[in-house]
Image (cartoon, rainbow, N blue to C red; front, side, top):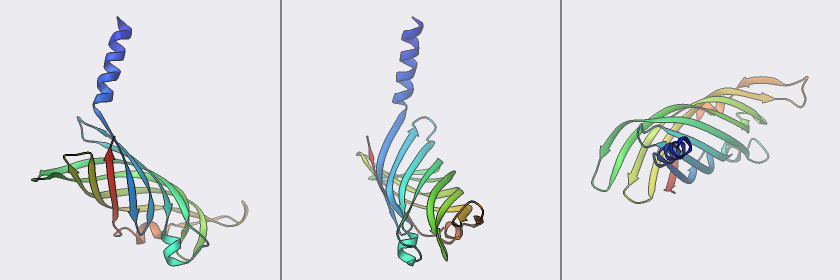
Length: 171
């Protein structure tokens, strides 16, 4: 009996979650995004795996960097329109990667992040997002353990107003 109740509780919780997978594109980064949204609270846990494009555009490094980001996003306001629901969201997160910085070669980056934007949720399986984000973190540089130094990750602040565009598919 207890096993049946546990399975039923897990099944009902799984139905309360929405899983979405999509493409992320911006001048800063290109990659994939995975969202898991709690249907009751509207809170969205987001994971991004991406190629860092800033070094590519600025020609400061020999190749692209990469990153992994996690954000805990909350919808603050929703407006129902004719064809879609428009939601405004924001939330904190963390970002880890191996990226170039202004005037620096690629190196490890650890940062806290803040994201905000708008989400167009259509009645079908597709939604579109336009978002912004800033990173406050450190960039490690050097060629070994003894000569490694830290600096503020300048690209994280300088690119705060570059938009990110995502097309998301509900699974």
